[in-house]
Amino acid sequence: MRRKPLKIQIDKSALVSTVSMVLRAISSKTNMQILEGIYMEAKDGQLILRATDTEISMESRHACLVEEEGSIVLNASLFGDIVRKLPSAMVHMESEGQKLSLNCEQTNFEIMGQNPDEYPQLPELGGSEKIVVTGESLLKAFKETQFATSNDDMRIVLTGVLLDVKQDGITFVALDGYRMAMSKIKGEQEVVRDLILPARSVSEISKLIDENKTFVLEIGNNHILIQFDDTKFFTKLLNGEFFQYDSLVRKTHDMELLVERKPFISALERASLMTGKERNGLVKLDIHDDVIEILSNSEVGKVHETVKAEKTGKDLTIAFNARYLLEGIRVIEDDTIKMGFTDAVNPCIITPTDGEDYLYLVLPVRLANL
Image 1: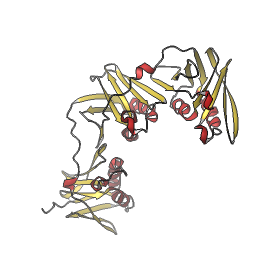
Image 2: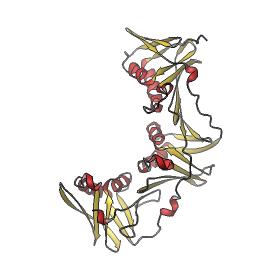
Image 3: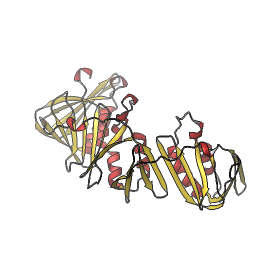
Image 4: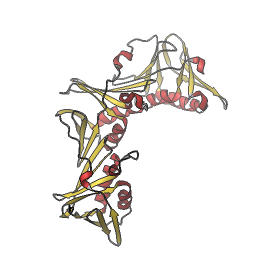
């Protein structure tokens, strides 16, 4: 079967922008050659580019001069490198069979492509439920939770962020067995359901979000779709039952601390420099009177920091993985944080002093290990 040729003209900057957008969906881990490619189609006065790794699928469009409608699949990495290095001028592209000729001023390339009929179609949602959120609140919720997802593929649901959608808002949750991050967006929703977004999808969506816009998340049976101007972003949902996160959150504490966030972060960062690799970044907090003494030691030396705090309740000595503690505190924007403790073996719960939209829970490390 003779393939219909593609023939277009498009400005280099527009081509680079469109190609760069869909390259986000290309994975280096695929063992399917066709998924290493970008699907290119000229149709209805537009250049349509599509890419997928089966988890993420993207389609981006840009107006161009279409002389002949057609399609081809090109190696994504090679084509991306080529278009970025082209002169700033009009790009002329024409296909013949599975070969693309690309001309830009004095630059001429011939690129071997693949059969576009073998390229996967965009996912079909098979549903019509929708969630409406502002870009600002969505970006904030992703920032406050994504870092706490698990890397353990044996617990696949924990490698994503849960969106627990209720009529009065959405709770975003991520946990990895050692800590849990929870962020809430208030506002009426017409949907009541759970969905789990893969961590990589959350990361890529976050890079595309305009904080000044409102977004509609269209929910299908196995995918969601988000529209970014001329780009469609599909992500596959993770299947499975998420942990009953509500059961982890205590309402009362035997001891509470109010501490200034920035000085506490700085002290923890300095202490973590001396933790030593064999101790997995452990720091000890000796909390008494109105101070937190931060201690760490290893084969390279030891460190002692003192941070002021307002304490209510009993004294306590407790140890944490410094990185886990720091990651949950860094995403808080308040000047002061609240820390709630029960004892040296139960989780610490950290929240902003103002508002209830964010909660971070982190398990301590037994002192015998320090």
